[in-house]
Amino acid sequence: MKAVNYIEDFTQWKKGFEFYIPINIRFSETDMFGHVNNISPFIYFEEARIAFLKNLGLFNALADESQQIPIVADLQCDYHRQIYFNDNLKLYVKVNHTGKTSIDIHYLGMNQRGEVCITGRGRMVQVDVQSGTPVPFTEKEKMKLKV
Image (cartoon, rainbow, N blue to C red; front, side):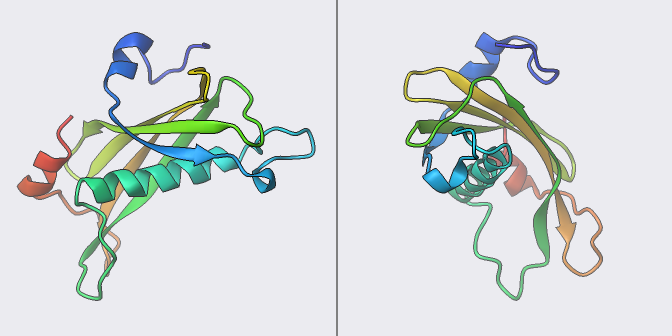
């Protein structure tokens, strides 16, 4: 696997993942060369991130009374192996770092043969719905996000 700037020790980094969702690659996600289009992993990251946060109890349906929402501030994907129609990925998600108002989330996508296909990371910031300014996590939220 090629080196990426957010992974110091791949073996240690990989051990930190527990939560994953299955991704079955659809034909519509491939390009004219027969492999997954380069935008599709970002959709997979979104799907996995939402499932992960829901699993932690932090991403409920946005109600009218919600005062803060999580937004993606940046997102990065590194492609290590091509992914094809009908492949089955396990897309792992973990919190790598929790800040005052943001979290750094990491992703690992492995195919049915256990080969690393994609890795990624992204920062989410919790913001006030009205002002758009960052809002600190509560102590309860921080406990759920513990690395």
